[in-house]
Image (cartoon, rainbow, N blue to C red):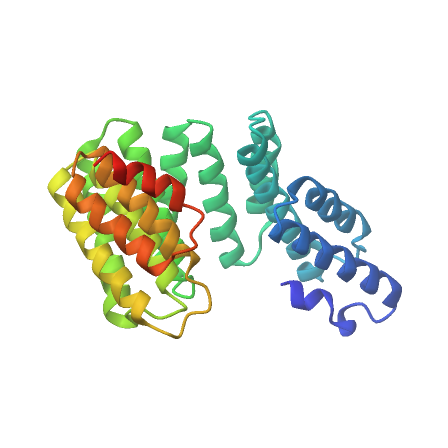
Amino acid sequence: MLSMLGCGCLFPSTPHIVTDLYADVSEAEDLQYYGKYGTAIEKYEQALKKLPQFPVDTKVINISFPTFFKYHIAFCYAKLVEAEGDVSLYIKAEAAARESYESAVVPSDQVDALYLWGYILFKQARYEEARAKFEDLIEIFPQHVEKDDRLRGSVLYGLGKAHLELGDKAAARRTFTQLEVLIQTLVKEHGIRSRSCDYIVEALYALGKVHLELDEAAARRTFAQLEVLIEIALRDRSFTDYGFLEKTLYALGKTYTELGDGSTARRVFTQLCVNFPDSSYKTEVERLLEKQ
């Protein structure tokens, strides 16, 4: 959608508006990328006010662009809560997500906005409402095969967590089993490639952590598979950024420490130290190793 903003043919009579609008959105996305969410919101709202109005038949301009802006405003408000701890901002995040969803005319935009809305509800501990949104997404996903597996995985994870928070462990197990099948499919189809590795590693770790709430044996199987995949990825020279592997090794080592499995924790931490000798986690890892 953003690329359409820079297309002169959409605004043939208002080139100055197009230039200003595109500059605002580009700046807003940069601010969002670097975590400057408050300033990004201001820029997105500024772009929204500049959006020219056209006849009703130009729905892409009159509806889809505001949907895009509202989605990113909601996203930034949600991230701002996580960064600053001001939970009152969830009210604004939810309002913007709802507006984005209700105004969307492109089905894929509806899917994105509905997931964000469900996520914001979950973060407010409104688990029943969040579960309903995630279940709606599960129902409509088959109609949107173009949506990537990362979003499908996020929806399944969110739905499973909502089931857990509501005390429905049986439903949580079923949902996390679906997530596990999806992850295994990704591993088989893509292996450990630079474009999919970060997601697979993150998803496996998250799955292992939720398994701990249901079945420690299943959690350990998941963590063991994660270790194997990380080892394979560390031998791969096609990556430009191994930071997510470093972070996951540290988190995994701490998890084993919390489980009282000192020998496995030591193995994971040793792998971290060998592969990342200048790691920012080094001091903390050495402290934890001394306790083993």
